[in-house]
Image (cartoon, rainbow, N blue to C red; front, top):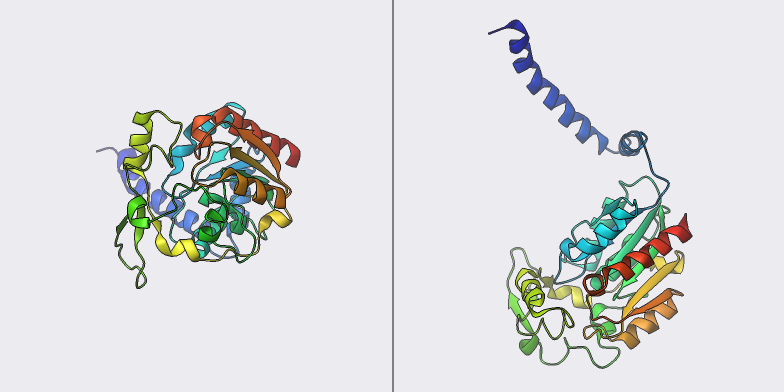
Length: 284
């Protein structure tokens, strides 16, 4: 074996160890900001970074077509997971992620994701715009259950046993469970207006929401200090459009109506991408 090959085999593990140590050091208090700045300094874009937060019974794939449209426009896009464990937990999780982004941010939330973004953006000066897509826009102390039932007509109302399946989860507080929408309910409710095959996939791949989230109050709302935009699906069966409009007007949001159900970002991704681009341009 040659000397150079021996040195390579010895040196590679040492190099990898040093690299891992450097990454870990970046997240030690006092080092995070300088590490992120150094990483971003090579070729930072003047465009805001777009961060997309999905809602309950969904995952980041619900943004696939919107992400593609925004990337074609030259935006850097992230769609981090929403844990769906609690308003405080989920918002803190997202806030920690946002803290790693050094430049301006346009923060977008769908459905319950609007609850999370409203709380996660508070106090972060880099968040320049909020976009709500078929979303909750809560004020302080409002709850998910209170807002979804504020106006009649939600397909998730009525007897919960007829709408949801319930499952235990490890480490749950006493009485808490995961809730899933019954697969038979998804096509005409959560995924109304989408092809039946696509709705069936959404029903099969849904991520559950902890039931305790429904009554956890929201904190201080970021929309009171950050400009906002709202996309409202006029055929939404989950969150009544009248309630969406009330919340959007209360927040002073720029409102765009689309002929879609609760999943506007899947039914009409181009319009959603256009609204996000408008928010980005206004915040530049």
